Amino acid sequence: MSYLMCVLLLGLVLGLVAVASNPSPYFAAMGLVVVAGVGCGVLVGTGGCFLSLVLFLIYLGGMLVVFAYSAAMAAEPFPEGWGSWPTLRLVGGYLVGVAVARGLLGKNWYEEDWSGFDSILGLTVLRGDVGGVSLMYSSGGWLLMGGGWVLLLTLFVVLELTRGLGRGALRAV
Amino acid sequence: MTPLIYSTLIISLGIGTTLTFASTHWYLAWMGIEINTLAIIPLMTQSHSPRATEATTKYFFAQATASATLLFAATSNAFFTGSWDILQTNNPLTYTLMTLALAMKIGLAPLHSWMPEVMQGLTLLTGLILSTWQKLAPFCLIYQIQPHSPNLFMALGLLSIVAGGWGGFNQVQLRKILAYSSIAHLGWMVLILSFSPPLTLVAFSTYLMMTFSLFYSFMMTKTTHINSLSTSWAKIPTLTALTPLILLSLGGLPPLTGFLPKWMILQELTKQDLALVAVLAALFSLFSLYFYLRLSYAMTLTMPPNNPAGTLPWRLNPSHNTLPP
Image (spheres, rainbow over the protein chains, first blue to last red):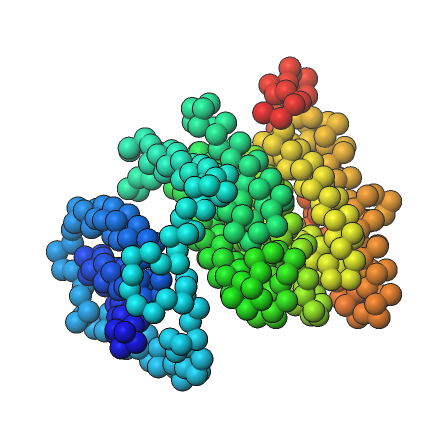
């Protein structure tokens, strides 16, 4: 279990390096998919199974899919992967940064110092965050409505920004 | 923009600030700040020009970075102290991080570089909302952080007074001048925060009133450059006579109201045995006074060359109302 968490966390850091090294959006989207998937695994390991499910569905299955389609529409003839020199230099730089951070902070960031959602050992269905979900619908009702309002507001904001085609705020100039 | 969307965005601006003011939990306060950021984005792109879009993008990047840092600091605080209460920020790492994140939100030096460029790309009305309303919610949070030492606040404050004064020195665009003036005034407010919070509120409320008046007088004469300001004296002669008073009040000259916060802040600093800080703050405010004086020189005290028709606008019927547009 601990080994699995180590592998997942390693995948998280490598995915971060892969995305931040600025490749083409195709490859960056793949890096994001890997990071999201691995991050969901980390969440399950620390007891947030519902949150992990929601993340997979909405983030990976909703937003990243839309992003991948948008990236496919903005095709470029020579996409830069992680083998091209500028990206490779950034990958090297970030790996050095990770090593430096490990040297500076490595002492207290092991898995046993993490505080998860609960202290159940093992992967069961009902973990720590399911209680929080039910609270969100009962005594946290006002916050749920506030969160819903913010999402609706974001929708209006995005629609207003992208309205107008060639005469709107966002256009090819 | 359709009236329905416009009113939704304005109401959301109100909701966001109210939420931050009313909250004791860091999540809710952060949520209010995010609502404010989101709601003002389409208001900033209203003029649909590339410059406005550029200003909006820069504003979004700066505010998103600051919000993410604030959320991280709040979560770290919950991890270390076990409490999400805004008044329970005991850990030095977290309250420093929170202070810096909120300083970036309101545009204190050295995190102020987004302010002039963002203000330059906006209409005067949107710039007014950015300078006044958008400062309320983060300022409410800064007010409630209780650090153990006044060093960070004093450093931010003094740097902001210097950056605001020195940066505005060579500007001719009025919106950039207003941005630098905002940076300098926020510096004065934050300087005295750890010694006497009521003085911070005095400085903030006088700043709000003065900046609102100045923005609004520029809106009435529709001027955005010193050149157009210098030929605008004939448009509304009463305004031409009164604007220097607003400008000198911003510069902090007695007997105008703008002198009051500066006087009290200097007095409090000397009582705390920080005479050097007081002297430095007062001296660097002279830079701000210079460009305020330059504005009143251009507008009222001199009459730059113009054609004779330029002396007649006051005779025509006003094309504006005196209430806000």
